[in-house]
Length: 209
Image (cartoon, rainbow, N blue to C red):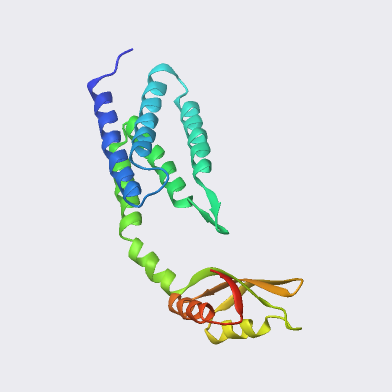
């Protein structure tokens, strides 16, 4: 068995596509960057080429590629400050592997078209995502005050004044202190205004946001 010039072209094309995707991830300082995306793209292409050459059931090997990429993607996703991060990067890893498999199978047109569409979703839709987040953003707040024989209901009324919706809230008392934790949703400017007021509230002993 030998690699034909077309096979070399497939590997080089995967290298280029993986480099472009990896550069975008590297620019955004994501966990899976330039080298990772190149290796995923080239590796998926090579596995596909070899599966076609050495096996009559190439689909079974392709399915194993998808399973392996799933483990890599799962390792990228983690929780940080009560939120899940890395989902987009994990999805890009999945798409990069699919592009490599498509190139390895010789489906250049659909692979390049998918690459362009994926690129547009990462670059062109980023301003749209920012616009949406400015209009509707979710933040977690935690503040602690001296317990004065009452709950922190006044702060919940304050949230409503700033047009912030309470998605989740809980309060806990420990000795002479009371702590409240809330998940609020609303425009970014309202969050910033609320944060500024709470930072300057003399009754707030601790404040996390």
